[in-house]
Amino acid sequence: MARTASALHILVKHKEQADDILAKLKKGAQFDVLAKKHSTCPSGKQGGNLGEFTKGQMVPAFDKVCFNGELLTPHLVKTKFGWHVVKVLYRT
Picture 1: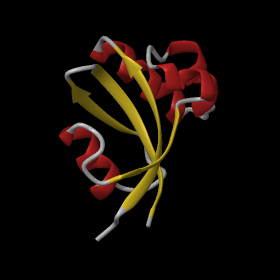
Picture 2: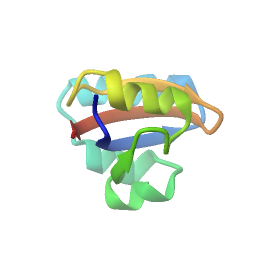
Picture 3: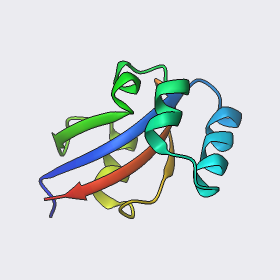
């Protein structure tokens, strides 16, 4: 089982905005550019880069996607913080 993961994310308040970001990514938009423009998380300034983290370090719904979801495919995740567009880069 994966012990660590690395991911990018974009945090927004509304599902409609997250859906719009997903659509832009599917059309070829750059994740880091959208993160810098739209994310309400401080990581947005770094293109949404969360770096490497361990299983259990993130809230459960986010953790589940990072350790079980498809790599390099943007996923939509709802948490108490809002809507996340998450792109898992790798797992170890």
